[in-house]
Amino acid sequence: MAIESRLFGPLEPDEGEPQAANATAATSVQAAANLNVCILHTILASVTRGGVQESVLVSLDDIRLAAGRIRPLVRRTPLLDVEAGLPWPEQSRGQTRLHLKCECFQPGGAFKIRGACNMIAQLSPEARSAGVITYSSGNHGQAVAIVAEAFKAPAVIVMPETSPRVKVDGARRHGAEVVFAGTTSTGRKVRAEEIA
Image (cartoon, rainbow, N blue to C red; front, top):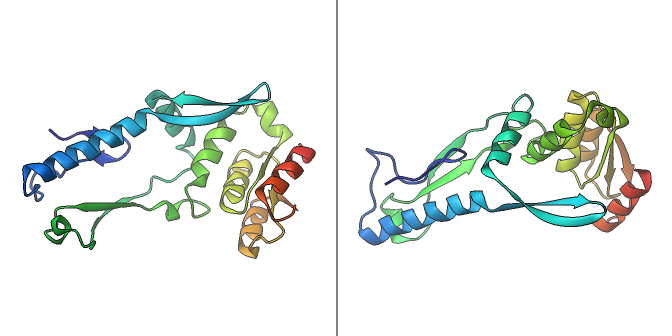
């Protein structure tokens, strides 16, 4: 029996594809599929409520709602099936599959736009017009800048003084104000909180 995840597609070989050479390999595929499904149902998110950071369980319905919120700005990227050339015997017989999720095709070149879009899309119009601020070494900051621009929201990105020029230019190209603060994540966080 093949288990399927709505997010990742089939977790066992499709009909017509090479099947596992023995029962042990088939059991391993089934166990991996079960693990993937369990992971999907036990994703934790960190949120701050009343100044206290806590973890909350993210449900499959939460994931579906987020997918709907990000659909207008985020690209549906391909999942490539690649022959794995690792030195395990079952792989040398072409029975193990490697999947690559090509998030490099997203605006900004990284998966970070998914979280930025989901968060900013949930803000009220009033909150968005007040602006958004984040601290980042690059990809997340650029993603926030891209999404803020799409929502016509002001954005401030606090970046380390050692940020690569391409990351700084990427955030600025989308209208964000870039503020430099130290070289550590803690320094950027403190500066972002001072600005906010």
